[in-house]
Length: 320
Image (cartoon, rainbow, N blue to C red):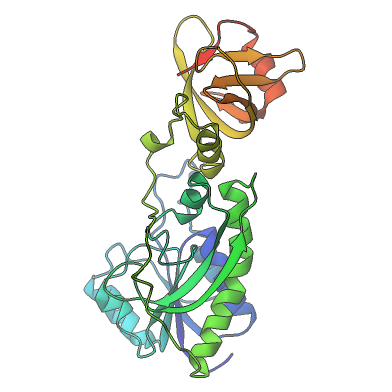
């Protein structure tokens, strides 16, 4: 293992795991890992381990799972590791006592082109807002969240039909090499961090997305906006609506994949047409949204043919 620098890796998600694997496989000196506590609310009998914890266990890397990042015992153990640098990928906000500890600083990888899309959900929001590009940014952590000096940036295009899940997979595959390149310029003392631009005309943000935010507004005047929202929330946290088809009540209907068809019509908004070719088309102001994959409350996610067969109705169906 390399002796310098001593690295503490901080992360919990599958996104984090790509960077951790890259550092471990390339034999960087990971002296410890900080990850989330186990989830006691897992449906399984066993507690849910974060992917990062599982990797630490499989490779005998020391790890900490603090409930409180200002806990005295946690800070004492962190000090024992005596890291030269900390690398943060997809984790909660760190207090200054933690990020200010290493002499070489703490760096963060953020999945957007900062200063645009600061916040918790940049991958979702760039698609919801119809952007055609995004990327990765590494920066040194400072007091203000996502405001630190930029080390490196890499830009990629967003496909017109791309979902948030597909974009995340692209960014994950880039993230490991991005972290390694960032670390190398720091180690070789070639880093020239730059302040984030303050003269951007319109700053767009990426706040956390809650369940109520995922409800589809079918009366939106723009079919493009509806289409982008659905793909920007797919597969998680997932766009949803209320579906009426059993003459009794509305059920929640999650929508994962759709096509858009721009076409003039005079039908009411939200009316569903089941075609002879087994398509489910929902009327909106500028045309129709055609469902490809969805999930009715209490059922599994399925393709539209199976979903239509399960409904067993062809008329008087609508969404709200």
